[in-house]
Length: 242
Image (cartoon, rainbow, N blue to C red; front, side, top):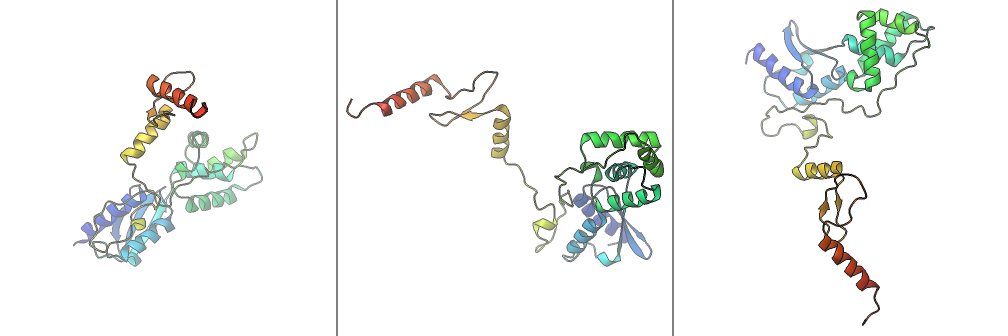
C-alpha cells in the first residue's frame, strides 16, 4: 500500500472518531495529523496509539505521527470569555491563559450555552477576529465581563464512532467510539414519544392513554374500564356475603 492510501485510511478512521475532519499527510520525516477545534491533542493521540496496537490496516506506526491541533477564531473568542476581561490582567498574560484553555478544552463550541456563543460571535465581529483585540475589548468593557462558566455536561473526549472494518480480534468497543454510546431501540423511541405526548396508563387494564388537549388527565382508557373499575372498588368495600 502506498503512502497516499495509508494517509487516506488513517484520515478516515481518525475523522470518524474525532467527529471533525482530520487530515493525515506525509511530510518528511513524519506523518502530520491535523484538525481544528475537535478533541484535544492528547485525546486523539492516545486513542490512535491504542488502535495502532491492533494493527489497523495500513502499516503505520503511531510513533511516526505528529499530531497538531489548531483552534478557530471562535474558539479563541470563547477562550477570552472563559478567562474573562478584568482590566488588571495584561493582554499578554491573558493570551497565555486563553491558549492554555483552548489546548485543554475539546470541542469548545459545545461547552457553552447559546448566550455565551452569541457573545463570542459579537466579539469576533467587533474585533475583526484579531486575538489581542478581543482581549482589549473585554478589558475595556464596563461593567467588567466575568468569566463564562462551561456547561456541566461536557460530553466524551471523542464524540465520534468509527465504522471502519477490522479483522478478527480487533479492538474492544470502547476504542471504537464513546463508551456511553447507545443505539435507541424501537421500544425506546415509542416510550420517548409517549412521554412527550403525556401518555399515562389506564388504572384498570394498564393500557397506555395518550393525553391530548387540556384538562384533567384521564384515568381510564374507556368507559368500559371506568365502569369495571368502579364495580371492583364497590365490591372490595362491601361486607363479605352481601
